[in-house]
Length: 423
Ligand code: AMP
Ligand code: GLY
Image 1 (cartoon, helix red, strand yellow):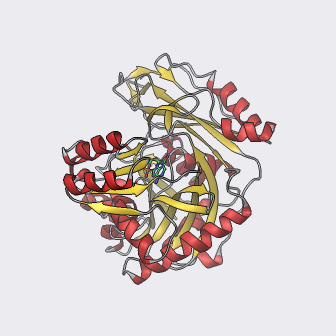
Image 2 (cartoon, rainbow, N blue to C red):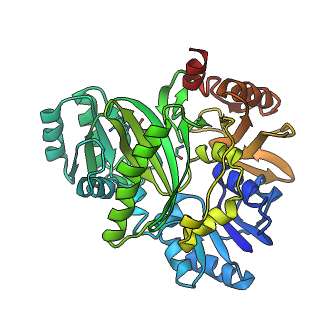
């Protein structure tokens, strides 16, 4: 099978590493890719936003299957364009990608199909939004409707903070994404991420993970794309997974199909496990980054037939096997991230990965043959262990061998699970 992978982050390196192990793979390309992905696939310098160019490349190489990693090309309709050429694609249509592209869209689906989530209202002007906040009081959550690179959400502990967030949105802090605002009830509990493949009508539960969104240790400081993750998430017991499938995933699948937007691809459900059970915070329509890295370390089955089954509508015919051993990944980021940071700083040495240990590349490039850091999040140092504690020790031992002056990381990834293990 000839496969094209779209994307260039740590998530796509993990997907490439796993896909390349498939006996079904005959030719493997990635666009635009990164130096880590280049170990597994031939890199193609396509502009991914240019859907015609991607379609032309697929025709020229007789590509059989396209796997889309990030959300932006999905929201922009790349999967639709390629399907028009009868290509098999992993990833939803632009219409179905609204589950990630518009928070208001998702809340409306939840309301219509009784999916547990925080009570909410949508607003397109500041005065009404402000009045609603004053009426509801704090804590309360203010969200820019559209894609805002993970920065459009304010969990406001005071009414003043919430009012300021509304002003930011309508004054253009998030561009077009903030033209509409969703205000929702604050949910109290422990967060977890749940991943599930879907082919439009069937679902295959994958695994759970927990991310660390804040930049600082002890979950302090500003939000980031994610500073580390582990899988599985202990809070997602078998009972919680079953309830999530029944109360959240299945009604979403039915609701999307009934609304005329059948969903195929991966559901990444951000959940809050509250006293009432699982409640939906948000959907993403792609794998999490860095959650994907820990999922791929634990997946024992061949990934290619699973993604293909999601694209072909045959998920009821496949199963996925997982290692019971937890996996943990630590993100190394450029100093200054998520604010401004220096680019092209040299990465002098990366440790050899062994069994159950791997350094995935995110924001790296080759400059005159030398490896440099070009992104905010740069490396994902990943390891497995018999416990989260052991996976953490192995990951940090590996990380300490990375020679990169301008890198930093959190030293406490996995702390919640490790505290549980000690209790
Ligand atoms: P999102 O971009 O929707 O994932 O939101 C970013 C983060 O804000 C989430 O990971 C949660 O930590 C937090 N958050 C979002 N919505 C809520 C809510 N309704 N209640 C409490 N925290 C929330
Ligand atoms: N790590 C969070 C995300 O991928 O959205």
